[in-house]
Image 1 (cartoon, rainbow, N blue to C red):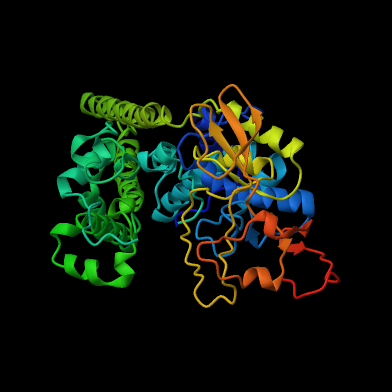
Image 2: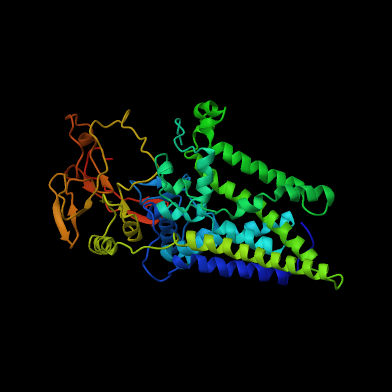
Length: 491
């Protein structure tokens, strides 16, 4: 790991990294505003944070169930869950979902930078190389690409045709091209999967890696060979994995359940960027150390002065290279990390519904009002999410269909509801709230005889049941009280 560093020196380097990363993230750290993170899936993944925030702050319990999406989905089994990541959960609980999620993103960028800094330390890279590695990895295109679609996942399916695979030439363009709408790539997969702009800079330094390995043989204390070989193997694996269609094991990838579950091979680009930047950092460090050693003036002579001038000019050029490469990624990729104006009418509508129609019920909306509905403690029955409904009515004891349907519908003013007997509740400039009077209440009691009626296609409706008032004392419990003294068998 090299010579022991003083705490003051470590703190100084970390402060430099934190300040630069903070300015890079300034485009989305507009705290105290309603400006939203971009991407059509951003609010979907933040729904997990609304569950956590509402449960812990209001009911003082950790949620095991997500009641807001569809008719409820298991939170603990959610593969997108990031509540156990303190970088995400602590800011959300302290600052709220909107501001906390932005701070969590900043901390994730910072953690990536510090992690790469530590890798540089392990590899024996000096200060300049460590700082360069940290900032280049934090600013790489695979980090900001999440802003395209909104997949801000704090965690790290089937595609038998392997349509997301890229050729070796396309992989190079993934790293070198600033164009996120490349015609050759968008035909294969969404742009948020292949954009990984890192620039030509690391590749230039990568050419010096053989010298670093050679220095290992000449001077065992220079660089450790095993980590460098490992990173080279990672880079090789990434390129072979992404170009899977042209590999001899492509058939194994298509027909093996484990390998077939990976959705887009290009998601390995982030690991390639990690190995690429780390190896390039070693090349940069080797050059910098060479200029530092040869700049010392051992004797006053014309050749000595000329040698010192050349090495000083080389050091200045190397510093310019560092500044240009970091600023290139800072400007190019930083322009993508920006918030957008929220759709304020959705929050006004959801707030009115929550305030004027109290209770527990289901709401439908075709426009994806995830953030506005969940922030107002409303249950979004037709929310788009990654879980598929595998429930079946086969084997049920009742003859009549019992189906949860929306009690309220938020629809644009240019459209009409297609449900039976809708009632207009409130009209806004852009949307209208409708009520479906026949939809079942959230909790109800029904006679056994009603359930066993065998009229074909006769779905159980609100007029067939007795509505009950559910109590939700914690995120994991619902209490329902019913009076069974009216005679007959009740459910």
